[in-house]
Image (cartoon, rainbow, N blue to C red):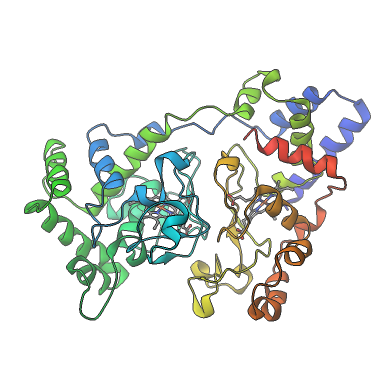
Length: 414
Ligand code: HEC
Ligand code: HEC
């Protein structure tokens, strides 16, 4: 924790005690001190390009660019599931159906918990994915496909939005010696630096001689937008535009309303919970700012699931982007936007309820006592993960069930 934040905590805490302020007065102080804004539904208008939105909509909602024609963004960012998929970890190509049905459909596992897309079109949202593999720093967009602006992408969201299209498990299709689809072969078999070029070729093949209804629609939309040489950058910018338009229809939360001055938008319990969140609960040490994330990387020591993406089915999180030892098992602080609607929780969705993961921040032992050590691997390996837990978690001071209830009530307002 930065010393500034720590001193702020102390100051706010001491001031409250000294002045015995009312709950609302305490909260207004907190809101001012942390400069909290109602940002859940805020949109960077620059993302929206009316000409490109229809292109984004087709790519988002139809499997037009999917190698096996079975996956679209809306497979895992589902309209009636608050733009998540409701699963612990996602099922990509080869899968069928929604929700639990999809789990047993034989599809390929994308071993991370899917995010909602609300809040992602804010101009302050510049670090994407659980490991931050797409990130804008000092005017440069770092990403596995290269520097985003130099490549012609208009925003960080546009780069994040196209990565799934280049991924085998999410989009390209099943790989097999005899049956891989031609898109997969063309894009998968080149190194990252060349993937964009290969993907552009595939895209142009799809729209220059459209074979199915969706390809025809895409070709038509590109034509109407005046795009002569379609490329993945245009697709990314179109997806960003569509996502921004879609999440613009977001409803302000109770907390948004409270920030905007409506004091009756929260119950007294929720107000108590907010004071805990920003005070002795230390939640805002990481879930800070108007989007409830510092966009930094921390470890809470979450258990490894059965399907991590790296060697020995581990998920080492941020370390796979930076290759730094100290980043092992660290994940980007998840924004708590609409958190009650985005179960299950954690980078691999191991936690079914909010209460479970909040308790786990404080003390991981009850979780294992209740859920059992699901595998020998956990029993023998968990110490390594435990040792990476952020020190800040040790400062969380929630000592009664009432305080925990109030905190959880507050999260309902986000
Ligand atoms: C197979 C399921 C699946 C498909 C298909 C899919 N996503 Fe996702 N999406 C995920 C998962 C899982 C994550 C989190 C992955 C991670 O962080 O490593 C994610 C993360 C994201 C994020 C980052 C959000 C954040 O807060 O960092 C964006 C943006 C996104 N997806 C957009 C898209 C778009 C656009 C498409 C279609 C081109 C798409 N997704 C297709 C499952 C999917
Ligand atoms: C040290 C930084 C840190 C602090 C302090 C912290 N969190 Fe977290 N929180 C995280 C990280 C990192 C994750 C994701 C961990 C993972 O999946 O491996 C997370 C996950 C969560 C989630 C799940 C969100 C989702 O979408 O999956 C909730 C809810 C949550 N935290 C609430 C809280 C509350 C409430 C507090 C205060 C008691 C708190 N956190 C304190 C870093 C922190």
